[in-house]
Length: 433
Ligand SMILES: NC(=O)c1ccc[n+]([C@@H]2O[C@H](COP(=O)([O-])OP(=O)(O)OC[C@H]3O[C@@H](n4cnc5c(N)ncnc54)[C@H](O)[C@@H]3O)[C@@H](O)[C@H]2O)c1
Image (cartoon, rainbow, N blue to C red; front, side, top):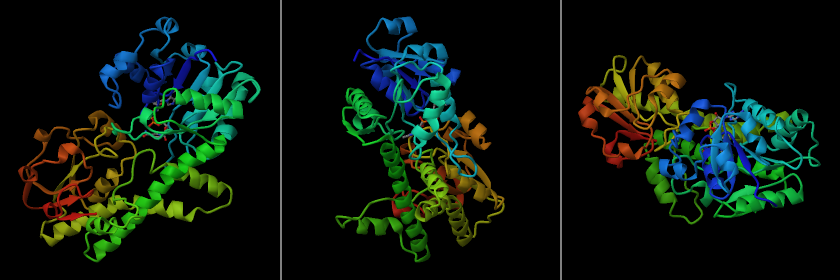
C-alpha cells in the first residue's frame, strides 16, 4: 500500500494527540468545524494542553501544498475541500448525552455526512468516538453510503478503534496505550491494525469485529463507573458509622485481589456518559440494565452529598449556614487538566446555593470564559482575588497546585474544610468522602 494521507475529523482531546502521533510518520490533514481551534493549532497552540507547543510545532505544516510535497506532517484546516485528498478518515468527534441522558449522535451524524461528501472508492473510514455496539455500522455507515452513493464493503470500508487516553495524563499518552482495532472485512481489519501498529508503540489488539471493539470500549468505562459507585456507596455507609473510608480502603487493599478505587465525584465526558450509551441500547432491546443505571444514579448523588456533609459540619461548629460564604476549590472534572465539561462539582455548588450560601469558585486550571459560558459562574483563577473570610472550603478537585494552599489565609475562624478526594492528611480536614 502506498503511504496513505490520513484525515482526522475533530481535533479535540482525542483527535489532536492522534493527529500528532500519525503526523510523525504520515501526511495528516486535521479537520475541525471550530475555526478558532484551527487558528490556534496553525499557530501550534493547543488549548487543551495535551500537546506542548514545541511538539506541535515540530509536526506542523503551514499549507496543504507543503504537506503534499512532504512524507509526513500535520496540516490543520476547517475547509472541507482540503480533506478530499485523504484515503483514510478517522472520526474523533464528541459523543455526548442530552439532558435526559439519551445518547446524542448529532456530531457523529454530521461528521459522517462531511466524510460522505469526499469519500472515494477504496477509502476507509475509522471511527474512534465512544458509542454503543452497532453504532458504526447501523448509524454511520448508512450516512456514508447515502452521501457518497458508494456501496459499503465494496467501494469503501469502515473500522472502529476506540481511544483510551486520559486527559492530563502525561504518562499514558496515545502512543503508549495498547489500541484495540477492528475493520469491516478481515482484510480491512488487518490493514487498519497495521496502520495503528506503525504509530502505537504499545501495540494493538485486533478485535474480531467492529461491534466487539465498540462493546469493549463502552464496558471499560462502564466497569470503572460501577466500581467507583460501589466505593461511593461504601463511603456513605461508613460516614454513618463514623469510619474513615480511605483508612478502610487502605486496609482492604492489602489483600492480593482487592480492586482499588477511591470515592469521588464522577464527571467528564467519558466515565459519567458512556454507560448511558450501553444502557440506552440495552433498554431499546428490552433489557433493563439495573447495575449500570444504579451505578450512574449513585455517582450522580455524590455532589449534593458533599454539600450536605459540609453544611452538617458547619452546624456542628456553630457556623451560621444561611449567611455563610464557601470557597469551592476546583471546577474541572478531574485534577490537573483544564477540561470542565460535565464536571460534577456543579452539583456541589448548586446544592450549597439551595441553602442560600454564597459560593466562590477558584480554579487556576480552568478557563474563566468557558466556566462563565458553561455554568454561569464568575470564576476566580488567581488566589489573590479571593476573600479572607470564607466559612468553609471544599477541596473538590485534587489539583497538585492545591497541595500547599494556606487555607488559614482565606478563612474566618472557625471554618470547615471538606477534602473530597482525601488529598490532605486526615487530621488536616474536618471531613472527606
Ligand atoms: N477526552 C477523553 O479523554 C476521551 C478518551 C477516550 C475516548 N473519548 C471519546 O472520544 C470522542 C471525542 O472526545 P474528545 O474529548 O476528543 O472531544 P472534544 O470535544 O475535545 O473534541 C471534539 C472535536 O470535534 C470537533 N467537531 C465536532 N463536530 C465536528 C464535525 N461534525 N466535524 C468536525 N469536527 C467536529 C469539535 O469542534 C472538537 O474540536 C468522544 O466520543 C469521547 O467519548 C474521549
